[in-house]
Length: 289
Ligand code: BV8
Image (cartoon, rainbow, N blue to C red; front, side, top):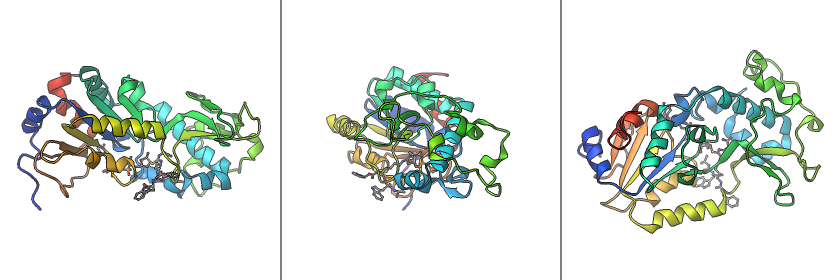
């Protein structure tokens, strides 16, 4: 099916943006690509020949918490080395100028908050690499909302050593980390600490999901901006269509890969780097960054 008229016209998009009040964004790993962080579908999909999606599971943590902790310690280290990009800053500036803008992000890299995105207008759907909790939830409810120690503990030092090739080179065996050397819960003393992220097979925060559904249902959503995501992971991938009111809502996709499948009248598709496109697309509201 042919894409709708003007589907990639920035002037037509700006016209719709200036007539839009309630705007939702759904962001994925592609937003942080320009900062230098690998995406899941790209290079980041594999870490030491381990499928990232397999490592991001309670089962993997149960089987080998040392390996999973090295994976997360490595991603914490990477995320601390990079900076938010113009895409993060454009969304943050947009939030400051439009109280009816809500940004949902699947990214756990903390770059939205480092770009000073107002927290009330940000929902971190899958948690953060920099929050910690006891793995014996719900028996033990210990959490640490923000911890960016790098390394988190001596046994994870390799993850913070850029010069240590073993982290990436699967041909170099990784020394197994005894559970006794991994960070333990300071409250119950028995549970291991784990990253404060939502693993596959785990539910997202119920209260946050209710709050998002209430925001979507409160009134017509004029526009949904879907940024740098492959839209395969649920429930995140379902919000754009949940928010669509036929004939009223424009779904705007910003992605390096062009796809016009399923586009409706009034939708837009902008192909390219989110870090260069978002400042351009949001310029009528945020001006020059
Ligand atoms: C749950 C945290 C229920 C951890 C993550 C319905 C249908 C099918 C499956 C399911 C379903 N409902 C639930 C499931 C199962 C599962 C799921 O969706 N599986 C998928 C794989 C099919 N969902 C779950 O398990 C969820 N939980 O359903 O619980 C439940 C209820 C009650 C009780 C028990 C259970 C939990 C899902 C969350 C998992 N955690 N992250 C961590 O990060 O380690 S998901 C993780 O992967 C990310 O957060 C993100 O969500 C996803 C990766 O996707 P993207 O961010 O989109 O990245 P990707 O690389 O795929 O794509 C990048 C895109 O950017 C590409 O399109 C590329 O072209 C583009 N791009 C690249 N560069 C740029 C760019 N675009 C612009 N500019 C660039 N420069």
